[in-house]
Image (cartoon, rainbow, N blue to C red; front, side, top):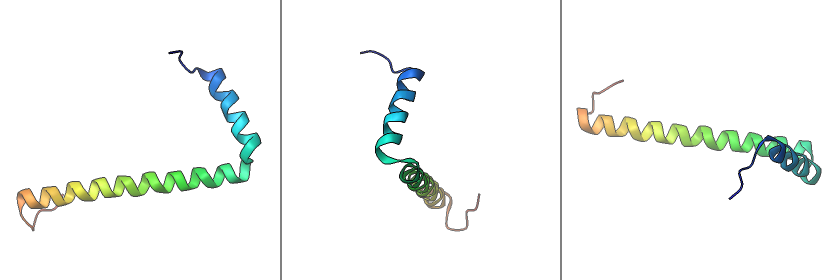
Amino acid sequence: MPEIGLPEWLIILVIVLIIFGPGRLAGAGTALGQAVREFSRAVKGGQTEKDAAEHGPDYTE
């Protein structure tokens, strides 16, 4: 399977910009950033709950 290099990514980016436009693409980037942030918080929250379960309810980091 061929690898995708920088020139191929640039071509894909240009095609996506032509199809969706810069405004809509920026909105998608914002939504993706928020989703990643929420996922990170959920993972961190799960870790905190796991630590509390292992060490007792008074455990703090």
